[in-house]
Amino acid sequence: MKQRIIFTGITAAMLSCGTHTQKQTAMHLIALDPGHFHASLVQQQMYPGIDSTIHVFAPGGPEVKQYLASIERFNQQTEPLVHWATDVYTGPDYLEKMLQEPPGNIIVIAGNNRLKATYIRRAVNAGQHVLADKPMAIDAAGFDSLQASFREAATKKVQLYDIMTERYEIRNTLQRELSQLPDVFGTLETGTTANPAVVKNSVHHFKKLVAGKTMVRPAWYMDETQQGEGIVDVTTHLVDLVQWTCFPGQTLDFHHDIKIDSARRWATTMTFQQYADITGQPQYPDYLLKNVDKDSILHVYANGAFDYTVKGVHANISVTWNYQAPEGTGDTHYSLLRGSKASLVIRQGAEQQYKPVLYIESAEHHNTAYAKTVADHIASLAQKYPGLALKANDNGWEVIIPEALAKKHEALFGKVMQQFLEYIRHNNMPAWEVPNMLAKYYTTTQALELAKKQ
Image (cartoon, rainbow, N blue to C red; front, side, top):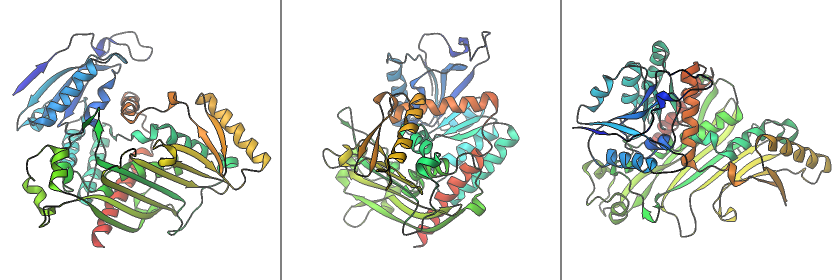
């Protein structure tokens, strides 16, 4: 089946890019099997030099319909105005049809992670640029395939990149900026396994209300062989932040710089009724029965934790998925960087009303000279991030961040796309990005391998 939905409006090919005024040949976006709602989030805005028609290749079913509904919803928004059209092919040969597209397009991949390694490999081989949602690899075999994909991307001279939205979250950005100020942070501690220098913990929930309705998750989301275990999924963001924050601009070699010390995994349990509430499915599919016990309780391996070192710095990573947050609560994020002069901490608990807050904590906060130094640096950063301020507390300071800088997670996907387009147009991806992506996925997949042996 082929479906064409066209919305009127100027095409992005008619928009100038940068200071150029002449018409340019536009690149096309291709959505390949968009099974996760992240697939549509890069379409919340238009991009100069990108054609306004999105080519969609997918198996038929509710997931592609949900994607198309999201695009239609974005086309109704007023800020910013968008005018996407979709050219849709659904059928069992959708991948082969996609591979017939001319090279040089940008393929966005966000969906069933079991298929992602194949999608990436085939797309790169076809000469397409690839922007993939995390994770790009969910096991050791996927990591081996990813290494091959990066080698082929270099040969084909195309870009392969993952969507690391958390780098653009303002508290993470400021935590990184502050960690580079020796007279505020000092130097990063080395730490120990018992007392790591870097800690990143994340708590999520399967059942969530969006606009008053329960968000529907596909059944395969509960299958670790398709979604990937928690230890290789959300942790991708956390490991990326460790590398990006603690070793800015440095190239990591996973053979020598990464060592997994310990790892564990555990399941979230849910009743059949709980499963049905979030999937809308009348029964467990066959592929989930391996994780269903005699009492019809489903065990979802969504949780994981590991201790590891990066260039000798001890870090702890953990992700937990509960079924549903207690009323009045929500997802939480905790991030700690320990420096010789101060700790930089992001908390998102009850005290913060489940909104992330960045703190500078130091035993020297009563020292007048040190306090002035901190205040001066915040004032300097406020020139780049308008509205930043400090609020003193018993342990140091809370960094006050105006709402204008605190973009919602969904809004950050456009930031990643803009950066990716920069890399494509100017072939200027930093030399450290590819080896550090490999270091990241080596870390998560090796942590899984170790956890399975425990």
